[in-house]
Length: 185
Image (cartoon, rainbow, N blue to C red):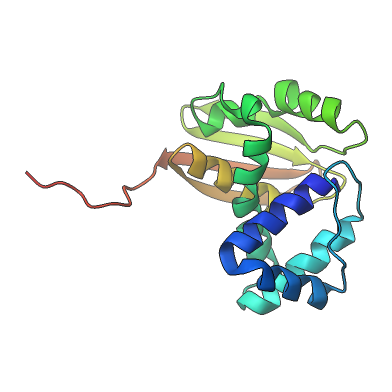
């Protein structure tokens, strides 16, 4: 896994609970935490961090993986703003993964192993994707999708189904509920 993922995870954890929390997770996972964005690291290191975070947060590993993915997305989007800025919504962004975004990622990180997202169905704000990855981390993909939806002020319902061909992500996007005070006239 590329170091840029670990860097974004560190930023997300530090924003959530400070550098002490990041250091606690590294210690619990038995890691030193020295990640360069272009470096490649064993997937097991991310899994160890997720397990440590799950224990600390009192959540399941799957929910923690989604939680981390959601919070990592803004950092990744900020690093590759040009790839995200041309999209008006999450569906557009997701439909561009294989043909636009991942080829650009591979230009920057030629040895990266990017997942494949095949669009099975698209109907307005409903999208069904077939996710295939040598990492097989659909919970991370779901978290990243949730993070993208947040960026576009959308909520997303995600149903994950495992098949012989891969993992199907059935997504339904809606406008996010307002978070601030609502004006009453």
